[in-house]
Image (cartoon, rainbow, N blue to C red; front, top):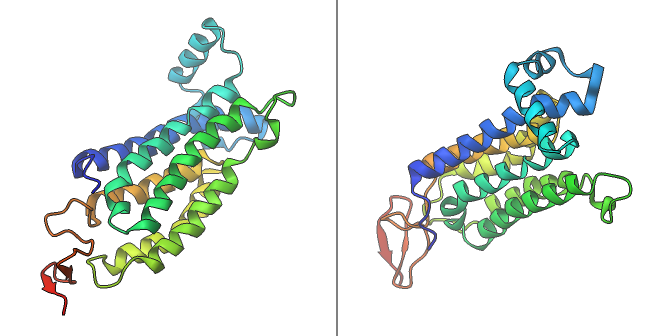
Length: 224
């Protein structure tokens, strides 16, 4: 069973994922959109902290800031994967597949930004994180539907998982950039799952046991 991280640490990882993606958003949007950057993001990008980071990066010889602020978003995917591990494991095989999709999104995001130059060997995968985000949203619906019934998975969790794609789209539209904006929505959803969803290591294990099935009340009933 997936027992780590503990629930408090899982929530912390999810919130850190959201905060990290949001922190990276202003400079990344400014690089991508230039004069068309939304005013509120442009104002944030002008904060001294970002000027200091850009100065430090240039001093370190890192001049492709689109790559730096873009690839760094992969960290948020990894944090979401860590945060949701125990909750997704409680859903069975479909939840574990969803977790691997989240982790794969982190790898593809990193590879995508590393290969954004037109002469990069894998330039064709630039932007590929969009398709993995879509796969996460679609598969979350599958996970919500096929998770075993009568094993302690609450209805709200199924509805929240089913709403993953609208959450991703809404966060992207609201924050005007993907995957950073999308990650904020995904990470906040992960925080809710980490805080309140049943876990694979709960004392009343939500997964079926060999000797019985855990009912909605959390009590184990003998299978006849």
